[in-house]
Length: 168
Image (cartoon, rainbow, N blue to C red):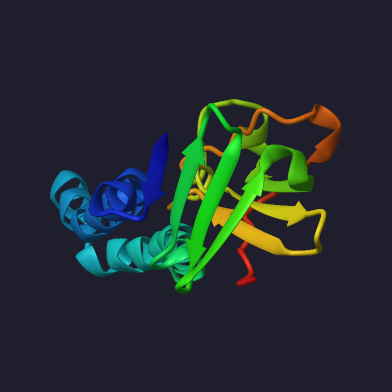
């Protein structure tokens, strides 16, 4: 049985581009001013621009994924092909055969199994729709890569620049 929940390690694994981006944006103006003997204020403007177009969207996606799956626990029992999700205090049990479809939302590079280019490329989430009509959202903060052993016809992959997860 595998048990997944959001931990500090999951935050670090997904959020390292945020930390790296902040460090680079803080030290970039000083480094460039030192290397070029130019005025530092120009490099601060460039740094703020880079921060706004790379780090801010990554922070938004990270916080969105955290709020969607905060406090959730996913247990996967291989032998019985059963998944138990504890979401907001309610436990939902289902078998892999109870899944009607899984819609996976991921970046173009992640879907093509290529290297990440943008800081948010590693973030992905899946919406599991059960035959009884329930919908469950699982983000990469909770389960790093949701590859369930189900029929390929049940899996729909939607690619995009970045996708925000919705609370279900």
